[in-house]
Length: 81
Ligand SMILES: [Zn+2]
Image (cartoon, rainbow, N blue to C red):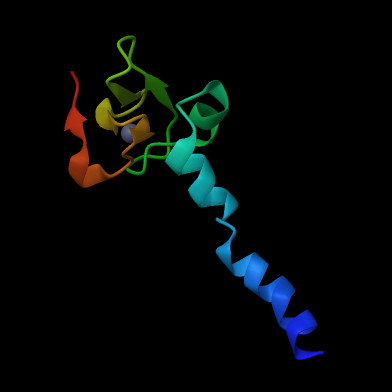
């Protein structure tokens, strides 16, 4: 009785969360770009043609992309004029 009740909880705890899965393994896609916004002004961001960063269409902050993971942090952004 104890084993059968504990087993489902154990399986659930080792499964990675959906959020972590998306941001750890998925390359930048159109779907991901649609949910990403500039943390400074809440405007949408666009992928640079060379894939090196994400540029805010409003305040022109450029967020770096490291190992296909966008770093959406104001402290990490540079201003791309
Ligand atoms: Zn912005």
